[in-house]
Image: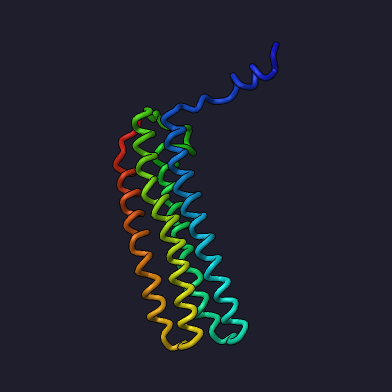
Length: 170
């Protein structure tokens, strides 16, 4: 008897609808996470330069550096919502191809907007860190500028949440 054939028969069969939903979850988490890593990274490099010269500005720079990281959290949240929606941890729900594609499509706003907004928020944070370097008392304005980019990530989070949540499965 062929061992690989026995192993393949022992594994549960992954339905295509579930596979589509999992791709959506992965894209939301991965792309938003990549954008956050880039945004936090560029802001961190700028913050390190400022803090090297003026260590007392660490906390103001840290806040600006952390802001692009929220998109990665939002993408992870959407991924977990998908996991719950398809009952991934409880044996799996019946998900048709159409339902899986609807969930995949619902994840795309968070994936794409999460990626791009985190990168651009990182760039705004770098500019804000430059402002803090010259005028530390203006850090609130720098934070507000970076948070303005966050608004669009929150919109994408809302759209993805509603799209995934409203998709009927089972």
